[in-house]
Length: 109
Image 1 (cartoon, rainbow, N blue to C red):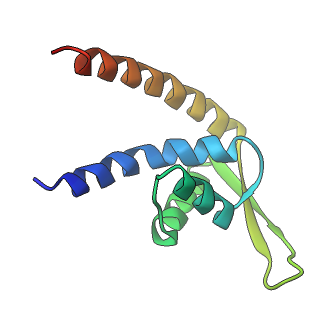
Image 2: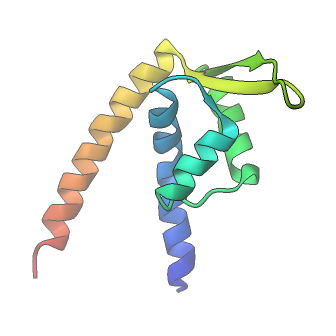
């Protein structure tokens, strides 16, 4: 088994949760999403993020609006929908439960 592959899969599993959490704070441009995820060591590339954002939009968990830019083409700013907020609340509960379960298991000798 390759530890790097397992680490990548663990991050991918949390990526949707993290993206929804970021956009729940307000509208965000894709490069800002990438910057925050990278700073948090959730290393992500555009080729991973754009399909995820499209899935979130198709599921009506996120939406976007176009904003004209002074320096180039218009930009797409993403935000969370009401349905997305409810979905995020459920994911937050699941995350808290997983953290507790993992800590319980890994704290034992």
